[in-house]
Amino acid sequence: MPMLEGKTGIVLGVANKRSIAWAIAQALAREGMRLAFTYQGDRLKESVTELASTLENTSLILPCDVTSDAEIDAVFRSVDEQFGRLDVLVHSVAFAPREDLENDFVKTSREGFKLAHDISAYSLVALTRAALPLFEKNGSGSVLALTYHGAVKAVEGYNLMGVAKASLEASVRYLAANLGPKNVRVNAVSAGPVNTLAARGIKGFTTMLHHHAEKAPLRRNVELEEVANAALFLASPMSSGITGEVLYVDCGYNIVGL
Ligand code: NAP
Image (cartoon, rainbow, N blue to C red; front, side, top):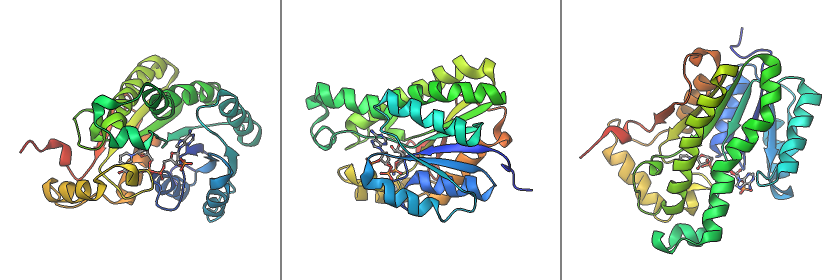
């Protein structure tokens, strides 16, 4: 029997077929999970609907700009009405204004800083809070976020997004500590660079890819499926003893000193 038969999840952050969120959704669906997807603005509705239609289990597709509390509330109301339960929340959303990524870090704008943190870090707290009543109904829940090594090391070109990811990783730990007594686990996957829409916003991304492949112990870049399989592990009961963790899936890059 598939590992996640009878379970339901919600995935935020599918933009197209290269999105990490889409690879994770496919892994969860492969194991029998029924999924809800969200999209930001009508621009992405068609693409998300088309991808979701390729999955076996009927999916729910809802609008959600994570800066809107009203949209977040509406999403979880619909999930409750349609699914009646929720087991997994996948947060695969990030944004920083291009000029704040490209400029010298010291020039980061106040507005850009706020927006990047709102979308890329605070949203994890807001979404987890909205999902909590559904998790409590089940007696358990698993929340998963996507992060990058630029949260803990200064990575050229990653700038403001690195600071937002540091906040996201700290939020993972505080949420895990807060919600552990309710049997809700909160973890993150720290993925090596993958060529996606968001990644192309990072100046010098191609150089970053080459550098990782050269220096990582496995001497290559990580595959989307490898990130998705680690996410599947953290989302599933296979990882029932793990919470507040940041699991690197980067071909070992982060362990290397020189
Ligand atoms: P992606 O396909 O571009 O996904 C990013 C998603 O965030 C898009 O669906 C985007 O929608 C969404 N988003 C941005 N602002 C939003 C908002 N206000 N409300 C709702 N959704 C919003 O890129 P990805 O690389 O798969 O990124 C997924 C996650 O993985 C991110 O957290 C990223 O930082 C992380 N990550 C990526 C890499 C990498 O190398 N690619 C490595 C480590 C971690 P729009 O397109 O409409 O903006």
